[in-house]
Structures are given as structure tokens and as C-alpha cells.
Image 1: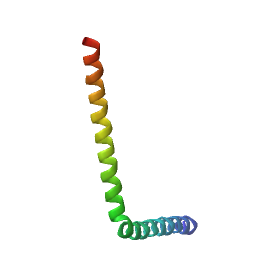
Image 2: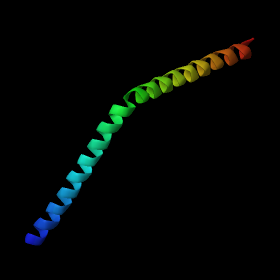
Image 3: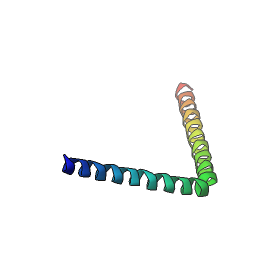
Image 4: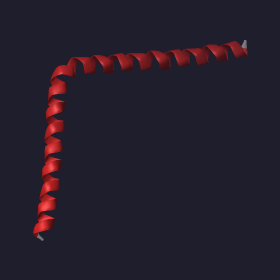
Length: 68
């Protein structure tokens, strides 16, 4: 029971440590990369929008070409 408790406690400690370190790194990276992340998100969004619009336009264009 003592061995199980120590193992369980160790696992819990390591999990807690991992969680804290991830949280800390996320906090630091979020403070640094907040604007960069937003910019990347915006650029990705615009890129996908442009891609989608071009695909739709191309499909419409090709369908018009086919009918004429």
C-alpha cells in the first residue's frame, strides 16, 4: 500500500509538474506570440478565403466555358 501510494504520488507529482511547466510555457509564449499568432491566424484565414474564392471562380469559369 505504501509502495502503491509512493508510485501514485510520484506519478501525480510528475503530472502536476508537466502541467505547470506546460502552463508556464504557454503563458510565456502567449505573452510573446499573441500578436504573431493573431497575425498568422488572420493571414491563414485570408489565404483560405482567397483560395476558396479562386476555386469557386475557377469552377464557375470552367462550367461557363463548357456550356459555351
